[in-house]
Length: 259
Ligand SMILES: Nc1ncnc2c1ncn2[C@@H]1O[C@H](COP(=O)(O)OP(=O)(O)O)[C@@H](O)[C@H]1O
Ligand SMILES: [Mg+2]
Image 1 (spheres, protein in one colour):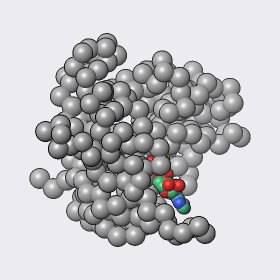
Image 2 (cartoon, helix red, strand yellow):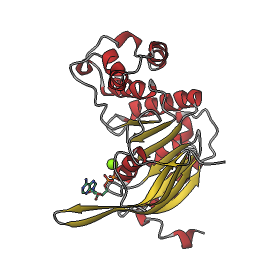
Image 3 (spheres, protein in one colour):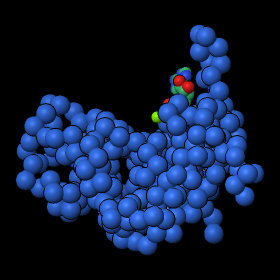
């Protein structure tokens, strides 16, 4: 079967005043339809660079991205949704107006039914009239998820979306994301530097090397679904965290010793 997303030999070099910054090097990966893949790597290894290339917002220096078999050469907002660490809500619009904003930009009729269902599932129904400053960080991030999912994109790209939240809220958001995903069947590429989060969420965890980001190792995660927070305390989970931590720290250079 054709992959939903194909990354072929992706490389990115930024030209800066102080010289070339090699952010991403020959990174290749197939992501299958309906899969939840976590990209894990240390800060500065090129995760965001990779995600922006996947979105079509930034071009690669070499290599290419295919979505449903066709090259991504520019933004495809109907098919690809993005969620960032910052909820990026417009401060002068209430929650519902923020969620409806992408429909206005795209001049599409607002899908009120879908929005209402998502608001219900995320526990935000009573806050539609609230302004962003009146909402907690977790609620703001839930609103940004509703805003993205209301567009019903086939692919969701998430860049450390829960990185600014406290640990409890993060667990809650991860559970919420998995529940929404199990209902929608979307393809998700989720970037994080948090090892437990990656294992907890993913079908596969793709570990990147430090900059320039290359593929260090891919782990299939066979934890049953639905997943629970308790699974993170099981010995198999903790061993996997330790193993991945070593790969992240060594950039996968210990591969030969491990296998
Ligand atoms: N627009 C840019 N111009 C120059 N260098 C950049 C730019 N964006 C990112 N970089 C550099 O590329 C590397 C990878 O950055 P990034 O993709 O943001 O990593 P990550 O998201 O994994 O932290 C870093 O060294 C960063 O400083
Ligand atoms: Mg980043």
